[in-house]
Length: 138
Image (cartoon, rainbow, N blue to C red; front, top):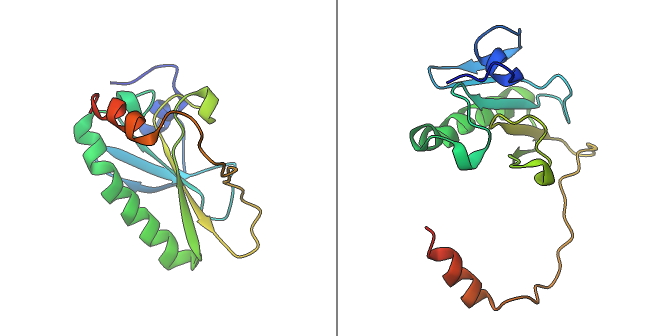
């Protein structure tokens, strides 16, 4: 399925050019044109899903092995010292393109990439109760 208004669907279909680093029947990976670091790559499923919640289970099961191939290629070619996998769901989480996508961001000593949150002490509902309530939905 393709969404005619989706820029990533158009990239997946070849309607918009991209600097593709990987492509198969289910996925396309291309260089981010506004990269956080050298080699920043975006991995998308070709079939449109707005976010993780809508992602087809079969496609989801293939996603991490493909991400690993790309991450390994980035590490080999760029000699990066680490790599962040970043995937946002919903505007509140920082998602700006509403087609599921995963960022592979190579990390280098001294780079200016910031992926951070403040660790706080959790003082809400006891974790045994919270985990039990969540578990009921899995």
